[in-house]
Image 1 (tube, helix red, strand yellow):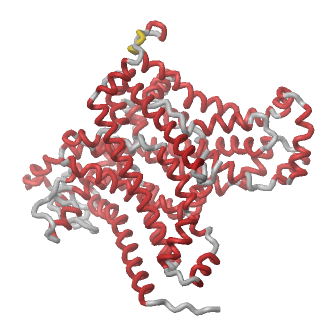
Image 2: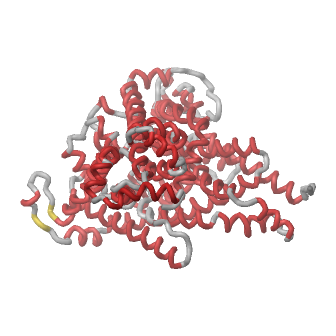
Image 3: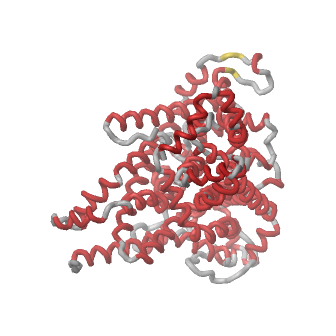
Length: 298
Length: 316
C-alpha cells in the first residue's frame, strides 16, 4: 500500500480545475436564473436594466398575462398531449420491434434491420416530406406530431443492444411453458427492459416537448394545435422586431403594470423549460446509459 | 450458447421461407406494420425527388408535368444566394465540428481529474442542463445575454473597460458565426462529454499505475493513457459528424438571423424553406434538398471507408 503525497503542482492544478468548473457552472446556470428573475419582475422596471439573479419588484403579473392571452393554455395542453402520447407509443412499439430482432431465427430479421438502419442516412428532405404529409391529410392534424417519427432507428438499436444481454434461456423456458411470442414479449422481455425503455421515453419526450418546427410547418394555422415552443417562437420573433420600441414604453410614466415582449418571453420560457428541468436530474443514469449503448457499433 | 443456437436453427433449416413465415407469423405481425410505416414516411418521399427534374406545378397530375432535366440544378449552382448558403453552412459546420470536439474532450478530461465525487456529479448535472432546453429557449437566452441595453456580456465588457459603448452583437455580420459556435458549445458541451467519460471510466486503473511507475506525471498520463483510450470513440463520432457537415443546424440560424445579417446566417436548410414553403417553388427546394442528402451520404460512407483503410474502427 503506497501513500500518495500530493505535490504542490497537483494542488495548484486541482484548485484551478475546481475554479474553472465553478465558472462553467455559473455560465450554464446564470442565463436561466436571470430569466427567472426577469419573469418575476415588473415589466417596466425590467427596462431600467440591472436585473441579475433576483427580481427587484416582484410580481406575478407577467404570468397572469400569458395565461390569459396568447393561447397558452391550449398550447400547454397540446404540448403535454403530444409528449405523453408519442413517448408511450414509441416505447411500446420500439420494444416490440426490438424484440423480434433479438430472435436469432426470425426470417425477416435482416430485412427489418436494414429498413430501419438506412433511415439514419436516407433523408428525402423537407419538401417531399411536406407533400407526403399533405396528401395523407396530416396538415392541421394532431397525428402529424406523432406518426412520422414513430420508432426511430437510433432508439431501436439501443433497445436491441440492451435486450441482447437478457439471457436467451428466459425466452426458451417461456416457450416450453407454451407462451406465444406476444406473451413472451409482454411478460418476460418488456419488464426486464424497463431501464432502457426509460431512456427511450426520455429522449422521445424531450424531442417532442422541445419541437416547434413541425407546428410551424404543419399546424401553423390551427389555433387548437399550437404548442408551447411555437408560441415561444412567435414571442421571440415579435420581441426581435420590436426591440427598438422599448424606449417609448420606458418614457411613458403611466406605463406601470404593463407588459413588454422581454418579460412575456421570459415568462413563457420558464413555463416551457421548467417541466424538463425538474425531471432530467433524476433520470441521469438512464440517459447516460442510452448514450453509451448508442455508441456501440453495429 | 452454441447448443442453444443449434436446436433453434435445426428444424428451421429444413423448412422453406414461406413455411417459416407462417410459423413466425406473430413475430412478423409485431414488426412488419412498423416497417411499412417507416417505408411510408422515410422512403416514399424519395419519389418526390422526381419533382426536381420537372417544372413542378402542384395543380397538375404527375404525367402532365413538364420535364426540366437538370435545369433546376444548373440554376442552383449559378445562383449566388445558394452558393453563399453553401459557404455559410460549411463555415458554421466546421466551426461547430472543431469547437464541439475540442471543448467536449477538454471538459471530459478535466471532469475526469476531479476526485471529489459529489462535486464532479454536481458539475456534470449542471453541464447537461442546456441540452434539454429547446433551441427556441436558447435563442431567447442568447438574445438576452447579448442585448445592447441589459445584456450581461456588454455589461461585463463595459465594466472592465474593454469597450466604450455596447456592441450590437446580433446586428453585425462579423460576430454571427462565432455566436452560433458559442451557443452550440454552451448547449451541448456537457452532453457531449457523456460518451467520453464512459469510455474513460472503462480504462483499466493498472494502466495509470504502470504509467506512474514509469514516472509519468498528470499530463503524460492523459497523453499516453487517457487519450489513446478514447481514440476509437472519437473516430466513430467523427465519422457520424462528417456525414452531418451540411447540417449546420437550422433552428439557431433561423431564429437569430434577422434581416441585416442574412448574408452570413442563411443556410441550405433555410434556402429550402424559403424557396419551397414560402415561395412555393417546390422543384427548386427539392433540388437543393437532394444536393444536401446526396453529399451527406457520400461523406458518411467516404469517411467510413477512409477510416477502414487507415486501420481504424468503422461505423458501418
